Image (cartoon, rainbow, N blue to C red; front, side, top):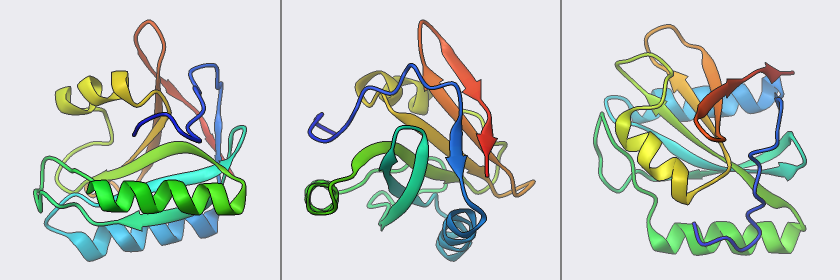
Length: 140
């Protein structure tokens, strides 16, 4: 993510994720098993209003990468819809919804909300990077 239409969101205290968005993300995660799924989250302030489902080009159960082509497409969509890129979503098919060491590394270069879905217990958790990585509440 290169910063265009990507607001620095480290000041967020919560993220709003509707049931309909959760259903879309859950279905995407389940369709990509055994691999991690990923998506770009659009909205304004702390409200996720739309998602852009992307392909994990690594096809890995423990890592994800969104292609440059899909990132460019994602930013164009955000620009056309006059929305901000406010987060990154990905799933952990075989583990809890906590940032891995790889996630933590990439949170530094992508300072948006990171929402992780656990394939084990089917829950969502949201994280932001401040001086350290902290969990923020997800509201509907």
